[in-house]
Every structure is written in C-alpha cells, then in structure tokens.
Length: 466
Ligand SMILES: [Zn+2]
Picture 1 (cartoon, rainbow, N blue to C red):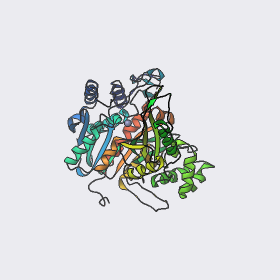
Picture 2: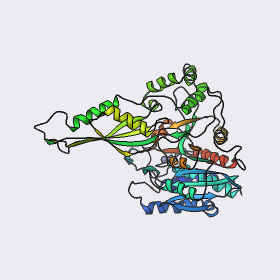
Picture 3: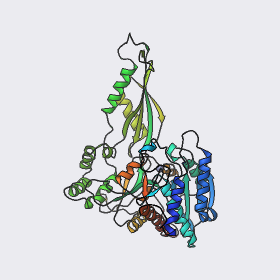
Picture 4: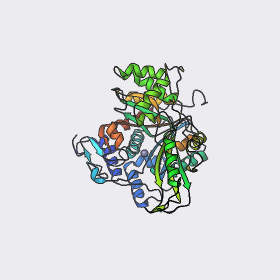
C-alpha cells in the first residue's frame, strides 16, 4: 500500500491505527520529571484502543505512568512477563525526518515516527495480540503479565517498581521478554538470511569521573604537569590499555548458527572461527568498532572539563568515562584495570555502577560444548521459525541497556527480542531520525506474540530451573 489506511481490513487497521495514535502522543521522557498530561493522554488512548485488555486483565499502576497487567492463566506455575515501554527519546532535528516525527504517517507501506520501533510498536503488538485472544475467548496456559514502563529511556523507576510488585506477590517468572533483539536484516556481511537475535545478556553501564587537581592560576605562568596535562595522559593511557578481548559462549553460538548461511568465502571462515574462539576474537576486533565491542568491556571518554576561560589555568580537570561492562568481567575487575592504566596521577570517582546482566539459558546443538536445550528458549526459537521462516534464530549479547535488566533479580530467563523485521537503516534510525516500521512487519509481530501466547506450555516445568 502506498499511503493512507482506507483499504486496510479491520484486523490490520486496529494495530496500525493504534500505533499511529500512540506515535502522535509525544511521550518524550526527561531525566527529572515526565510531562503528566502527555502520559495521561497516552494511557487513555491505550485503554480506548484495547478495551478488553483493560477490562479483563488486572491493572496495577506502577511509578507514575507505568502499567503492570495480569492476565490470569490456567496455571500460575510458570508465569511469563512481556515488557515494552511507553516513553520515547526526544527528536533532535525534525527537519531531518522524511515524514514528521510525531505524525504516524503511513507511507510506502510503513508507519513513520518516533517510537515506531522503540518501543511503541511492541506495546501495540502485545496489546493487539492479547485483545484478539481475549475476543476469541482464549485463556492462556500460564499467567501472563504485561509490564509497560514509562521511563526506560532515562533509566527510571517504573521497571524496578514493577519488579518490587511482582516480588511482593511472590511471582517468579518463568521467562521475561523485553525489547532488544530483532529480526535483523543485513546484520552480518555475507549472511543473506536475516538473523533473529535474542539477547541473553546485556552489557552493564558503569561511569567514572577521572579528576586531577592543581593550583590553577594565571595562564601567563604555567607550571608543568598541571591538571589538564595529567588528565590528558590518563585518557591516552586508558586508550592504550583496552580490557582483554574474548568471545563469550552466546557469541560463539551466534556465529556457529549463522555460518551455514554465509556464502563463500566467509562461510567456512565463520564456521572455523566458531570452533576456534581465538580466531573469532581476531576477526571481530579487525572488523570495526561495532564488532570489536562484542569482544570486551569498552571505555569511552565522553565529557571533558578544564578551566572555563582561555586565560585561566584549570584548578581541576575531569574526564567522564562511560564503560560498558562485558559478561565475564566484574565492576571490580574493571575498576582495578582503570586504576592500573591511569596510574596515581588522577583520582577516580565512581558515578554509577552497573554489572553485566547474568546469562539466561539458551539452546545449543552441535557446539563444541555439546547439546543443551532450554524449554523457554526453544519456545521462542520455534515460534520465530513459524512466523519468520526466512530468519535464523540465535542468541546474542546485547550492547545497550534495557529495563529488563531489573528483572534478573526475580527471573533466571530474561530475553530481549522485538519480533519485527528491521533493516540496518531501521536499526540505525532508533534514537535518530526516520524511525519507521513496516505495516506487514507490525502485523507479523502481532502474529508472533499471539503464537507465543497460544503455545505457552501447560503446568509446571519438566524440571525445576537450576
Ligand atoms: Zn527502547
């Protein structure tokens, strides 16, 4: 379809029109406070679009505008949590958008606007799937919780509060599913099929401030080794001392799974690399910063401060370091490494401490470490294969942070996957400009959540989780 939604059938138009409506309400999150009017409007819109979801599910408001909904299933033995968030990041330059960012325009078969991919598309797909199943009289095999945060983009309180409510109610989810992965096209050079990447852990975010102090004074009489020189040396030292590189097991499994789908000459190389992790490390480091980040904890010097005036010597100089902590490294390891690298000339202040999320179980077969199947991961994999037969499902390590990290406190299986086809350009549009989601891709996302909910297994786990 080229434009408009006049020709859509009712099932199509429900999801599409709901996403358009949500995109038109600019629920931009701010670190200090959110605009209650906008978020109120969004919650009203959501209720009008999905009346059965709001009538039949038990609704708990969390934090200011987060929602936690419980759909009672036939069993409470293996509850599942489907997550998404209602807030979006700001639009920096509306002029760069082909279609206005809060228009929700349907053009060339896609819905355009801020939040279509991150993450209102998931909100709409989850709600549409549940609404349709309620209309059909479906009762899920297990309790299903929907957790919609209102401040994910500013590392807010809604998700921790939802976790608190679940803990108080004694809910230990069988699995939690949040945004993160996607049915990613063009993710790996030479691999023709899209890869449906399911995040099984995410890097942690830790931030430091390096600080050097001195006498300051007039710029006409500088002394050697002042605060700015010491900070500069510390930054250079850190740049020259990266953390040791390695590939964690889920990355090895990812490459093992995609290798058969890579053409010549890459296929055999990938297959070989997956068998010899040292080769894989070398290849990932060589292929650019994006793949290099898959192999280690990274340091990025982000802020720099010295004197406020050109003719004043800084009495103190600081550099902010944003660190993404890799699975396998602890925050203590990383701090010790930084301390060694920068020496005694600068002080280190820890601004925030976040470790890598624990690794959720996933299935492997034919890997060097043998076969291991996980029933929950298998369910995701099987439903992905049913709805996206063109895709190769695979576990991966997420580089960015999601609200789901809070749920690792109450759940062993936290997965990050949004069931939408996303091209490289679409993935790059997240937090940038021209964010858009294909109409058919939204509908397939609805179909996937539906299938997942219909296929939840009965009763208790075959064996209790380790
Ligand atoms: Zn998001």
